[in-house]
Image (cartoon, rainbow, N blue to C red; front, side):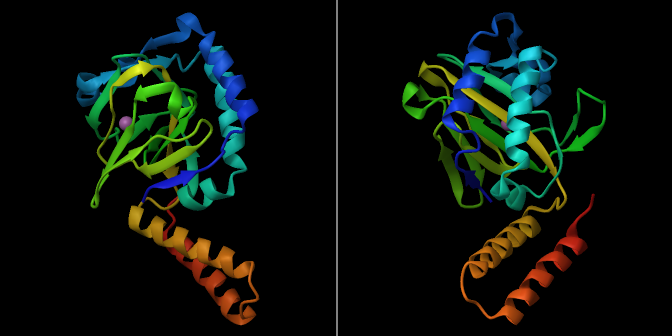
Length: 228
Ligand code: NI
């Protein structure tokens, strides 16, 4: 399930982050520092040093925005969020086909996080760079994603994906992983559809008993499928 979340950050927040990242200089490091064996072979980009003060300031903005984003919560059912990271693809940089590592160590506290959902938050306007498309493969084929600055895409961390080479300009983005309350993609997808339908019914004059029953079904399925 691919879910696009519009305007996770507003234009002012995007500009604030971009200014911090553009001025970060030496805090940009080779992206391979966090890549596993498979990823290091195909990864060519820059990443913000996770421990830098700039990274921490930017992380706080993104985390606060995600914590109050209803669509993100409904689609990802987050249990643990990896501290968001920031990357930069200049001309000639890209990240070939790979699957994200299944377990990551939180650099803040050493705890392990199972990556269920991958998230990319675009920070450059799509017309400011050529290439740099996020391509995600699922059972229906390859999907190209290039969103407006401030928008986010969620996709299963288990899926093959790549960032095509940037041929002009610079692509700045934020990315993170979610350990979801519901690790199974199909189950999480059903809950998302059910929640969306309930939200629509809430805005209509739907039969109250039927609506209440569906809300109960949602919560009882979530109770059954969630694994904190
Ligand atoms: Ni990846």
